[in-house]
Length: 452
Ligand code: BGC
Image (cartoon, rainbow, N blue to C red; front, side, top):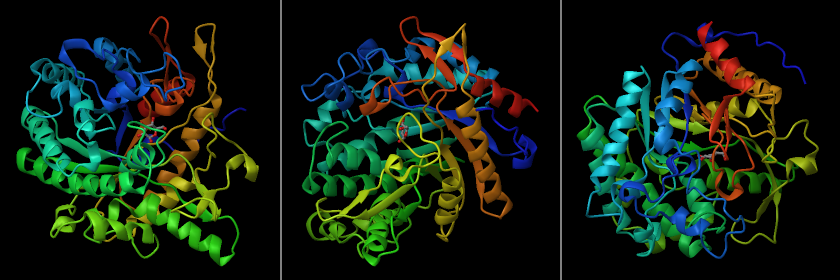
């Protein structure tokens, strides 16, 4: 497929629009036992009996821990001036709480300094799914004490780096790690059932608000956000029960974490399952604590969901009609539908909340079956993907929706959680046996686009 050249240029997005690439600690750093890092739930999960992908884990990953300087140079070469990365909690607190590992702080300090020296703005995510295992042993996100543990971690990071880092994101896709890790059991720590999921959701929602407040207190002039999974949801048929199923999935998928942060509580009407949070786990004042006035909301969109009513799926009573069943025009290596308009639709949907002040696309991208041939990676599908999705961001901006930045997922191929190393999301190809980096055609496209 030959991509058609886009009908827009960087200038159309305005001079202040932020262009960056995103990553997460466990997916790229490796060095899992280096300099006093403690184990996280993903170390335990990927070395445990339920894990089926032998030798696929974050032990080495992209070895970013040792290669960050040259990786940041590559990022710069592609024209990006913002880098989103996360801090590994168990590098800083190997036991999750209490003792601070100075070497862990030193690593991020050097990483941040290197960003600044190269003229790259660091955008820091505080929690990208890698809870210290020591805390999981005490119940993890289902234990209310996590509010205290998380606050201690955020306090430490913001005191250490707040004088250099101005962009902070409290959570990364809370829906995905609570649903994947505490409901479906396909992500670490592999727990299942609403009795794990619902308290985890509630404690994460409180931590999201409390985390925001701690950043505000410790970092003068900070721009504070949190990043959310989002997808446009369509009913498979116009039948009322499919329409209700779509509204339920929208409540659970899109609204679950934004609404408490805006002071709107949980969307219990469309998703009655959530009522149990209020009857079983919430204490007086909790909904207030979950509220925070974020400077921006990070939206992360990859696909749309088409759903139908289903009696056989307990608790949610809905199931996805997969893209292959719908015979969509194009799907990615994750079996996700390429649906560019979806990005426009989620921007529009989240802009409808009066209190959402600004939106940043903190992740968007795609995995395709890339091949290294003669030292190059020709990935026209990804070039096309980015062009089409960016066109929709521009459409939203032109219609007056506030969107102030875009981060591609991801800087480089990395450990794709439950899917291991097969899906490649990078603008840069990583040859894992040699750890060589090769900028893909899509990375070259960004370089040309951003330098124009
Ligand atoms: C996550 C990333 C992940 C990406 C692609 C997002 O859900 O934040 O860590 O790699 O999607 O699946």
